[in-house]
Image 1 (cartoon, rainbow, N blue to C red):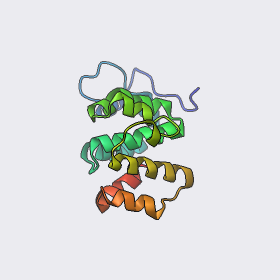
Image 2: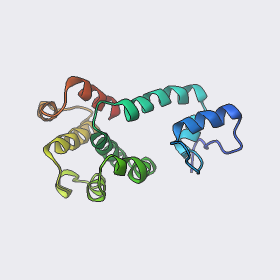
Image 3: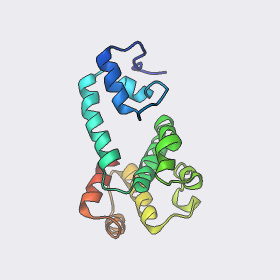
Image 4: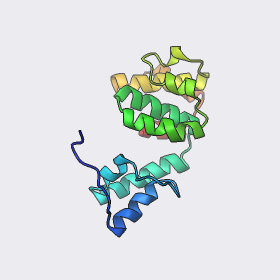
Length: 159
């Protein structure tokens, strides 16, 4: 049950144009429910679009790393809808295969698959931040081996 119902067609011309910007060109189905809910507040949707497009299309993190973070955050948060959207579209394009993708949804993600040291550091950091809203020095140090400051800031914004 949605607390705020997504917009449904027919849309105004402005809303249709704005919603289509969120979707890949030529997609034959309706824009995702998340986008249609956000467009109940077009000004907020516009601001969210800028951030989302910036992180997805122009981010400094490798696409696979970004998708691991998104998959783990959404799995830990119980956001099956968002996890599924990324699992079906963005994660495979980023090189996140089915075994590793499934592992992001396991309670012990690190122990349930063969992760690289970089990805292990990411998963530990996501789990710490989600569990305690803090990052230990050891988790930070593990990330610093693989990422520069600009990438780390992007990671923190994304988590």
